[in-house]
Amino acid sequence: MKIKEIIKGDVIVIEPDLTLKEAAQIMSKNKIGSLAVIKNREILGIITERDVLKNIDSLKSKVSSVMTKKIISIDSDSYVENAATLMAKNKIKRLLVVDGGSLVGIITATDILANSNRLNDDFYFF
Image (cartoon, rainbow, N blue to C red; front, side):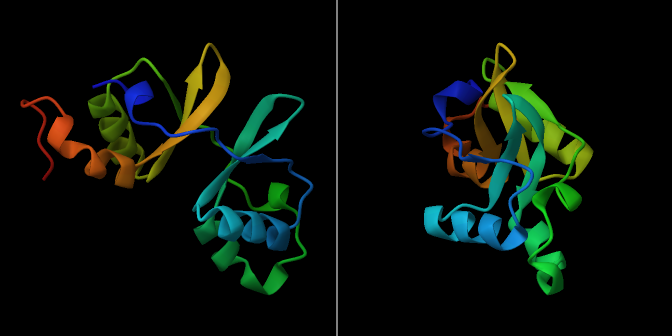
């Protein structure tokens, strides 16, 4: 199964100069655990609820000061099994999904588990 078959809707993005408090409010309002950080259509990083919680005493700080800048992404035409392998290898729970270099979504470990019954028979979760 390809990633583009299971990612949902538009990804919510923010700019790096927002505060952690603003990022947390956007995540809460949209019931999501991460936001892609974009400026001038360039992917700069990702911020997660964990990043906010680790910096709870400085909610006025800018997103750019705590976001993960090492961007790990996968193409929307890649297989879900490849996403799971990439997540495990990098010890992460989310991957930015791109199509032709443009951000089209985020795939999470939860997304993969929710679709595990549709994956190839030769791919196993341990």
